[in-house]
Length: 554
Image 1 (cartoon, rainbow, N blue to C red):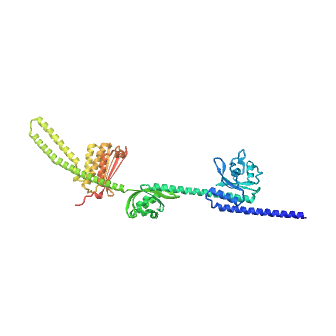
Image 2: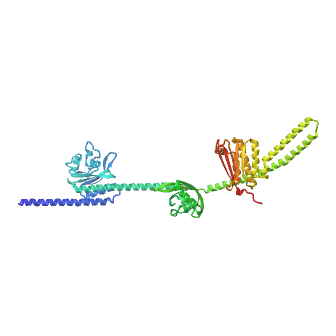
Image 3: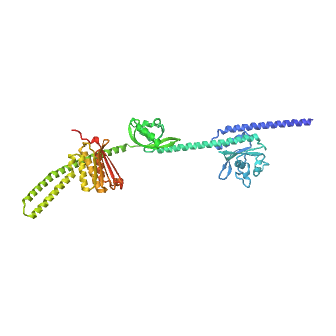
């Protein structure tokens, strides 16, 4: 009986020691997991993370050795990067292949854990066939059991976490569950670290890109801007600040319309609305600076998508010098036109004077000579030869008198001064039809026109030059002409049924006839329009404002 009691007491004592051992092991395991979790939050890079985890499991968990390896995709092997504990060169004599090799190196715990993405437990190194290639080296260093846990990153194996214990059958169900949790924590932390690195790289790249784009937009000769649908500025260059006189903080609070005076805000508002609809907009406007100065600018903008919202990206150029040059050219054109108008008036006056001199002086003298020759013809009798000569002289004198009348009329038709523009046009139509055989249909207003002499002359010369061009170039048989008032304009329209031409080619050739008619129209503050196509005839329209044509009443 005493022997049975002793056996029972020893058994009870052994079970209590086992429970105490298991309790101590569980306590140490939980402490290890807790230590790992604490160290993980301080890790800032993978190697630091691996070193902290290995130290925690060896120092707190009581493992003989722990190491971490990373997959080398070029050699398809696991390369140890960190170890803590009694290693004694064990890692340097091993080749941790991922692939299953004939020599069995790929079939060990490390290779299988990586390939299968699941932990592998070697409960007894001395008897596990998977450890045969490294069995002696492991046992020599006091390793009796091991566990290999895959380190996953975004679902794929990126490395392995291996632990070695001095005890066989060390890894029970609870330990395996908690070590799996440690491996998942390592994987999660690696993903966080990589995402943080990617974020930092993205931020660095974004800053570099912004600095680069800022450098580009700041070196632009004009202003650069981007604004949203609320017309609030999203981005601008330093040139815009310099031009307007606002600093960066002040500019950030501005609204697009704040940069324009009251007289132009409606135009800018319409343009900014249209660019969001049409996609593009160009406008000339005066930019108002902080000091109230108005600077002429040319703006061009396009609609874009910025941060998934519509915005306008644009540039603007100071056109002050261009405007000054434009005004100088305009003034020069006006001066030249005034000079040409003055020369035209002088020319018309000279032509009128020459016409009067020819008609009054030469015409009267030739008429007097003709009368004297006629008197001689009546006095001489009997000599037929002399009579024939006198008849010939009288015929030449009659022809000369007709030529003088024609030349003086062409120089300045007296009917234009005596009866006005309408009668002068009718007279010229009759003369033109007689000389060319081209039919002209003229429709003139019946309203009395009180026009300045320069306008009478200008419209008559335009009509005269047009008919001359038709006779020379158009091969037309019929011409239709109208003179009529229309919405405050006096309009002269002329159309023919000739062969037509290309107006674009005529502009390149700088045809003097067309250029002269255009200049005459501009001298009268009028407008000029020509329409023609090869084979479809030609139509011209000349318009001059009536309110500036009427002669002042006496």
